[in-house]
Length: 198
Image (cartoon, rainbow, N blue to C red; front, side):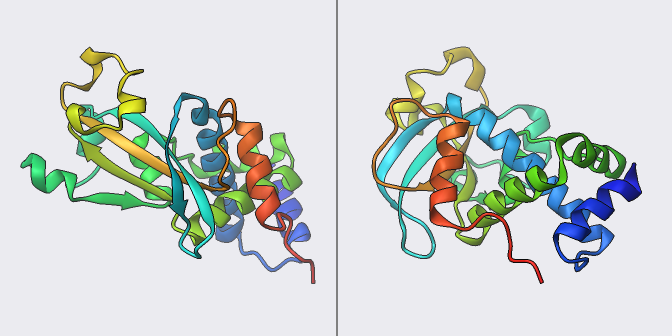
């Protein structure tokens, strides 16, 4: 099963990927699928944001309780003011928010089960976000959460504050409802998903 997954991914990439690179793509695809599944819980907090390359974007925020386990995953200062000045970017932001880190065998098995082309497509979508600094996580006190997001959160869940995961998506018009299909369409419109062969 492991060899089959690597063979599929490497053949689609023109055999240029090493085993580690193939595993990395599976992990990126897993991160992306976690993110698109979480999107329905988010709220648009800025309609005039920008990606790192200047592309107009919508900023979408997702909030997660700052549990002891999540806080233990990083070196967050004790002082609230200092803690709010810290942030985590990219795939580390997803991990800090709770995205699972798959072990090697699990990742490779997942690649076989879901199809190599689908893995490459989702990995490319996630890579697009990484290259444009579109993911960031920061800690916030409850009173400093965006108003549109705070209203939907249970008051008892954020006693230790909240982790705010912000995703910037290319576009200027908020959708009627946030969801994974909308995210796929926005990213696919702004880049060619499947890499060139050869």
